[in-house]
Image: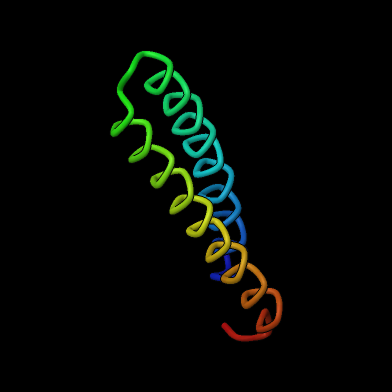
Length: 72
């Protein structure tokens, strides 16, 4: 399998997997808040936000792969 194909698949997989984690962090932030763990909820909200930032980097990398797919 060419590097381009591998990168496409890996980046998409990582992005999708990361999105699942982001949703879990958000859910548990709400659970923590409801249970009185305010600082934990705040931290999990931050983790959620950082995870979304990472996903935007995966998306940027995917665009670069597409833009430069003739490179081997």
